[in-house]
Length: 97
Image (cartoon, rainbow, N blue to C red; front, side):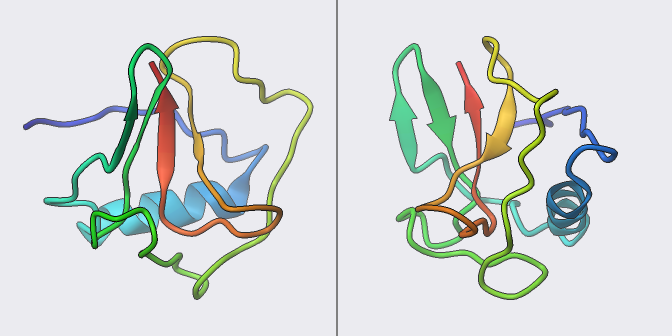
C-alpha cells in the first residue's frame, strides 16, 4: 500500500525506538494488517497473526514501558506502543487518527 514515515524519539524511549526500527529493518511488518480500527480515534497493527494477540519484540515476548513527561498524545499522527498493561510492550504500534 505504501510507506509510513515516522519520527522516533531515541533520547526519550531508546528501547522502544530500537525495537520498532529493528522490526522494520527485518521487514517484520510487511504484509501485516491493521487489526484494530476505531474511526476518528486510532489504528493498531504490528501483529503478524492479524488478531492483536500475536507478535513479539526483539527483546523476547515483551519489554518494559519507557514513560517520559515530554512525550504526550496531543493529536493526530502520534505513534506509540499498544500493550495489555504495564511492561507488556511487544510489536504493536498504534497511531492516533
